[in-house]
Amino acid sequence: MPARLTARACTDEEAVMFVGRQRELAQLEQLYASDKFQLVVVYGRRRVGKTTLISKFCEHKRTLFFTALEQADKDNLADFSRAVYSFFDLPASTGAFATWTDAFGFIAERGRHERFVFAFDELPYAAQRNESIPSALQVAIDHAFKQTNVFMMLCGSNEGFMESDVLGRKSPLYGRRTAQMKVGPLGYLEAAQMFPGLSPQEQFEYYGCFGGVPYYLEQVDPDRGFRDNLADLYFNPLGFLFDEPYGLLRQEFSEPALYASLLRAIAGGANRAKLMADRAGVDATTIPKYLSSLCQLGIIEKITPFGESERSSRRGIYRIRDACYDFWFRFVMPRISDIEGGFGKAFVHRLPEQQLDDYLGHRFERLCLEWLDEQALASKLPIAVTRLGSWWGTNPVTHAQDDIDVIAADPMEHTMLIGECKYREEFDETGELSDLDGKRDLVRGYTTEGIMLFTKKSVSQGTARKCESRKDVMLVTLDQMYKG
Image (cartoon, rainbow, N blue to C red; front, side, top):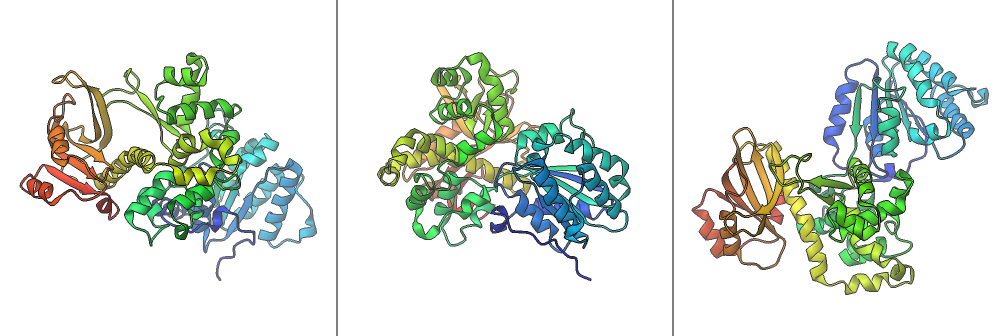
């Protein structure tokens, strides 16, 4: 007899085209195959595709699925009761459970006699209205669910809540989970599947400006053109992404304005705490805790020169990791008044190509690191790479500040590949290769086994011929990266 799924409305997130996530699906299927009780915690930022992933996994599995809403506890419990009664073919007139404890106990008792998936989506919404829910779940798990083979999934978009009140040491649920999965944005190859008819150049432009959140990419109309899509989604007061990044800050933090000021400072080039404090007009001693919170959410990241410890290095800098935030705080937030005045579309179409290219060039370096990561995992690089990064500091030969855009290294053998990323139509190709050769000894303790030149377009035939005789040179174009 085929498995029966509960009838429920399709959410915005579920309506998104399903692409990628094969690794996550395989992990969930492996857990499901164990045929014993599982408690899987799935979390990640809003619209990243959690519900879509869970729904895909639950296809053809008997599933009790409930999504809590931002409403009174009594209403959430009543909705939950109706979902439970419907799932177990009980009359709707039965009435709501008196407590969450009763509801969970009922489900666990049914779980002694049959196997099913129990997915509680947006748990934070329910728990913020009734703080006893995690404790009620803990009691039900310890005294009943563990004796079943129910596959329980707890899901939430409030990452802070999920990490502290579900996974944290002080949570009643601490130690009960059998697996946890933080769902992040799609990688560039997965994101490209959303635009199968576009060229790699166009796919990268959308990835560089919208990032890898599936629901954001779903809003793009490829027939409208790149700048028109920017105008429609970012630079229109009614656009889907006009307020999205700030809305996420409001959801996660009690001081969204301060976090927004810090992100605007980083987007504007203030990549150290002291510079951010000066721009935001706040005490520099208070900055670290805010930066730590932004790092935990994956909005920003702290990086240090390759080979240096993140804890002890004094040369660490911060950069915006998420492309949607990066673009929004660099181009949208400074123009909010103009956009609200109706001048957003005109601004986008007057925005100099060089400014967009400079921004995309910054994201291009991240793309090159993503490509290297994919190549390393597939063992397609000339050395066994297990660590990636960048380097900056003083060149001991020239006594000037220098940098290496990307480094792919084998720490065990102390070997590495170094690369330069050029997102330009034209540049001095011979000069860049010569410059890379001169940087071979900048990272102490490592031997450079090869150099890499990443480019927007193919290098000239003359440069390609010069490199043919060199086994230590890799020429990688944007098109090649999108071939995997």
